[in-house]
Image: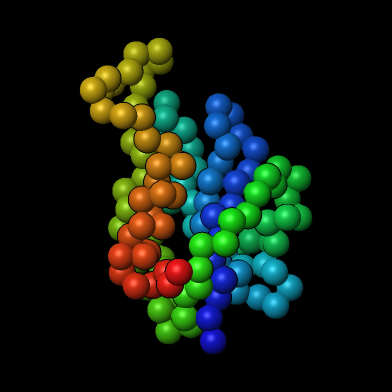
Amino acid sequence: MSYNVYLVSYQGLPREHHAIFFETEADGSGFIYQVSGNIQQGMKHNHKKAKKPENSNSFLSKVYLGTTSLANYKDVKKICNGIEPPKKQFDGPTRLNPDVPLRRCQEWTRETIQALKDSGVLET
């Protein structure tokens, strides 16, 4: 048995919000792995049960990434938590580290998807 895995996008400002969705239930619901917060205060891991993404009012898109086996699914949370969430990057209008690229949910999601692939948990 395996679960389908998707990159999901939701409306957000200043950019779309990205998350990783594991479809674990027959009704299309499952579990979402994401970071929440902002670059003014920093972000934190925010993993939770989720309804079918298309049922959200802010839903934009769902892109199939691959599958994860039931046996490998137990490692997902550990891998996701191993990718550091974006830190505080501004103090008011002042950028704290101008030489370091900004990092938001989209960057965290991209890094986490790669870590899931590298570990063999996400099979494409």
